[in-house]
Length: 241
Image (cartoon, rainbow, N blue to C red; front, side):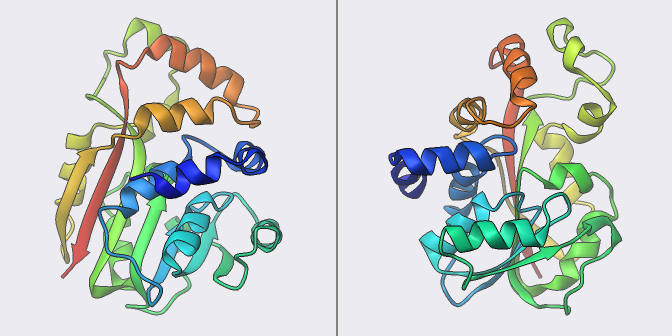
């Protein structure tokens, strides 16, 4: 399943690139697992929504040859364009700045696939978000999301070992698979065709904890406290009907 990511990681220069580009659990590995449940080819137009520093974009262009619009709110298009030039994928990618909560600047039915890794939980936790995205995907196309989650809903009973790391943003964004399925099943115009906990969770988190990002030090403490008991990675795939 992880042929591209494992091969990429086998090169020391690539590993340095990865450590500098990760913004959470290794988005390349997560993207490769999510993509393995889809049929992707070079003729597709894909929106990589919340692409971060483009690790998922790199996977989609290099493994599948797809044309990708790399959209993010936090990372500027210029920064990503320079990164895409450096790794030789700038001819396959259109970098763009997007705030998904304020609407997307694209034509209806423009994309074959809307793909989002380690980002959707920040903006997609409302009943309004998924319906607002559906019009941009062709009928018969797919919306595929992979996000950090919880093995069960904590509610007000946050485990004692997790309380030092809990805050309002984590409480808002991290939910169980059942919670996300319930939210997506409320949307009209899609059929939820796959939902599961992802197998790459442990490895993707382990790789993230080697990154150079300033929040890693705190996440190392959090993951040690968590001990594999509470966090997972969740994938959701819906077909536009």
